Length: 218
Image (cartoon, rainbow, N blue to C red):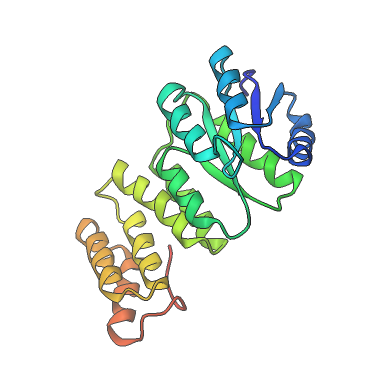
């Protein structure tokens, strides 16, 4: 695991302390910043392997910090921290380059597992299977908008594979969009006519009301 320090950026002292304590067992140096301005100053002085970044802060907010990190320090992975219910911000942040997000309230094990997983990939680009797995995980947790971002990234890497297209079809169904779901399922079958999940989904929506119930994800 990388020896580069982790930077925690949050204007709430208790959050900075809780995250720092959560990461102690990883034996990686942890530093903190109480504002977006301080975070950028620290980044200018040295390299960090990972940043945990709160999106809502006074002054320079987390989204602007993320934009600057993505442009100036693309090697620094960013996990964003959002308040419960701020999925729209999480989706926008991941489009800007964040690798994952933590939603308050979170527990120590969740933080460690996420950080460990990301650091194990340090120096390696996320591949199709990585994005597919992350999309499925967020589907399980019911965050379909977030899952859609990862599925789209998977399609970008391998547009001729059916799995991510099928996931996007299912996500469209959760929004009640039958036409979009149909298009994604048919696209999946164009690349693999024998792909059973897309076959079953396409057959189902042809005869039933478009509904999240019954979606075959894989």
